[in-house]
Image 1 (cartoon, rainbow, N blue to C red):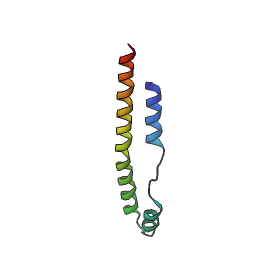
Image 2 (cartoon, helix red, strand yellow):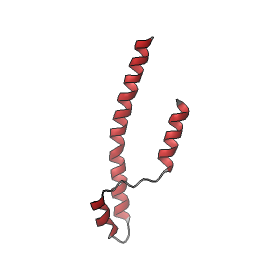
Image 3 (cartoon, rainbow, N blue to C red):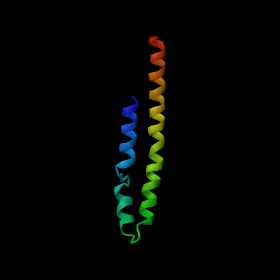
Image 4 (cartoon, rainbow, N blue to C red):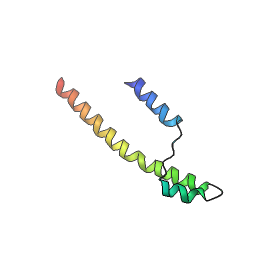
Length: 71
């Protein structure tokens, strides 16, 4: 379990991700410096963390409760 979680965290930290929609990308590619595009991309990635945290927390709680019930 710990090894799988470690591998998952390493993959998330290492793999580059681009989370811009097509419209945002088209508008931001016209900018020369690219700083706004990086900011938008980082903001989208930041906002996507919370749904995964919520689903992971609920999944963990369900798993823990089922383990307690099995004992």
